[in-house]
Length: 332
Image (cartoon, rainbow, N blue to C red; front, side, top):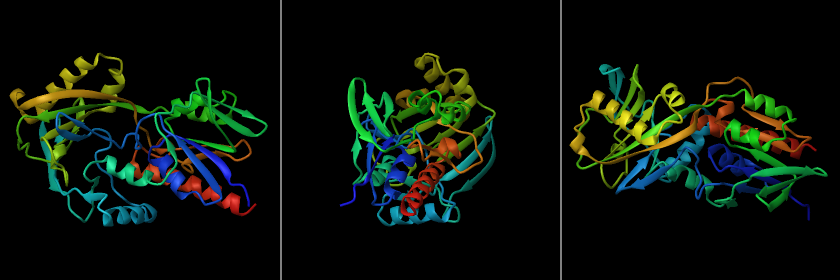
């Protein structure tokens, strides 16, 4: 019996899940995830009776490979097209509006965005609530640790977290360290609002320009949503970067003011609100293969930060890395 190549994947976001699903049977993959569930920024949470998507709001599918997986998920009711009324604001003025339809589908997970990552994680070997704090390479074998406890020994390690966090695990002398340290991800704040009653905002989703917030969605208008009516608001990356270390109550107050300013939503309509900070929320578009691979050193990096800040980019990065590693394995 041939021993399988042992691979540790750090992070159960979309790129890590895709990589692990796509790797050939010649590998034994273990995923380490610090949270208690998969998905990374593709996530949802029930707050005061409302099921809120507070990370990625929707996704599109442009490449044939991603479209194939999207078709499978759609056939299994994991996702559905969100046919909402979409508005673009220039500050407070409406500059365009249209209905989303099947000509250019905007997909969401059902009954929430977490359904996407949970479906992808099914049958994978994932150690949740496990934080890889450091790793060492000894005699061509990677030893991973959480504090003083060794998590396992592996032939290869794939890092899928944001660049800054990957740098914290990489040896400072490794060539990837200098590459990743130059990638600056942008921050974001997500304002999560639960309403006392269902209120018509005049739109289901809105892109906002020339304001401190960039996105407003009637989250409860998405397909298969149940529970209390809700709204999700995202700050612009520029405003979030400038106010990253502000008190969250002040951030919440400012974002609520922006929401009132644009929509005219009455204060009395809000049952509860809070803010989630995403320090590593978005990445600029980058050229290249979409992953980093040091075959001799047994280390690789993938993720949307190496392509563009999109769900499809994370999928593409993980899939291309898996295809490359599988090809090298099958031809040696």
